[in-house]
Image (cartoon, each protein chain N blue to C red):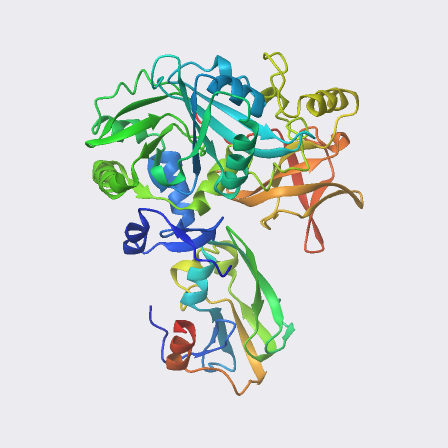
Amino acid sequence: MSNPQQLRYSKEHEWLSGAQDGASTVGITEHAANALGDVVFVQLPEVGDSVTAGETCGELESTKSVSDLYSPVSGEVAEINEDVVNDPSLVNSAPFEGGWLFRVKVTDEPADLLSADEYTAFTAG
Amino acid sequence: MSSTELRRTALDATHRALGATMTDFAGWDMPLRYGSERDEHVAVRTRAGLFDLSHMGEITVTGPQAAELLNFALVGNIGSVKPGRARYTMICREDGGILDDLIVYRLGDTEAGSLHYMVVANASNAQVVLDALTARAAGFDAEVRDDHDAYALLAVQGPEASGILKGLTDADLDGLKYYAGLPGTVAGVPALIARTGYTGEDGFELFVQPAHAVELWEALTRAGEGVGLVPCGLSCRDTLRLEAGMPLYGHELSTALTPFDAGLGRVVKFEKEGDFVGRAALAEAASQAEQSPPRVLVGLVAEGRRVPRAGYQVVSGGAVVGEVTSGAPSPTLGRPIAMAYVDPTHAAPGTAGVGVDIRGSHEPYEVVALPFYKRQK
């Protein structure tokens, strides 16, 4: 699997895009999606919610388990992906594209987000 | 993960070549899934799936008094099982607590006057069952032998299973009933062919020498190519058995429960000859179950999409009325389902106001009779 170069990554396996129209997009990585197995339910924060870097802001249920969703940055939720709420399998089939989770107006970004190469090395270890 | 090395089946390299996600299951490194567990589940319901179940524990019991030993050691009437047939049964402690649920196959007699059985235990309990059978064999003219390493176990399950197997064997599959087994040859490999499974579908379990496992797996894969057979991992095996309402040891069954607590009192045969381990306690449990029924194992179907997990509380009107033992999203129903032990007052199908406490939120659930899924014959 390859992690897109233009994204940055958290050690909790979320990805973050660069800002576009004032907000950045958040999703989980293919590595995380594969580890979860078939995702059957996603609970996302609501538009207008404040999220804090490194804190839980939702959950992902797969066949075998439930996992917390962590926000990679702090900010205000600008949009959520209704498609992925209706069809959680998008997280598995297109984690970096149609399976994105929410968009956030970033107010603070941790200094320790990883580059694609660093995240690839992180998950290989 | 434990520090001891995981045991690997004869098909380990095959699983890795197929890209399986592996998991530690009772000390065995087993395939959890090869791709999407949902797709694997659907394949077994509509076409066919191929499983490696070599972690299951085989114990051979032979001798002139093999039947008497098993009648004493287990709760079922094993003496009534005819050659070539199998029986679902349990082994209990003296206090009636369930040590494991088992399938006992009666094979052909090895020699005149000596009976031959194969007891198949859950991987997690294989040693416990072996130890109990060995201890209980004292005084019987019978031998108990650990044959875990003597067998690989492959299962072909699903509506296409019999068609796939028919092309590979001369054995009379049409004459082979559910819960029957016969020795035969599959793809040139000597096998015990059993019509058993844990999926709610028609299917077969093939006990073969480990040295033949890869050859058989590959032959089955080729034979199933045209009808959509896929390799299947333990993840979908769990959702398949859950939909079929089949109990899993460690979830619906435990030493804290008797077969009567689990709603499976029918496996206890008081009418059989002689004493058996747990008889007195189980007789007590049976009459207790009639006078004041214990919690009842029921099915729950979600109205929403959040998935109940083992250990979650079943609630009604702010009170705890039960506990979930197994839960998963059901591919067939398209909604989360669970098995749960609930108070008899809340066990009737359609009971209003029952929910599951899912991490603090009370999600509405419908009480239904088990199983969730029954195949059309």
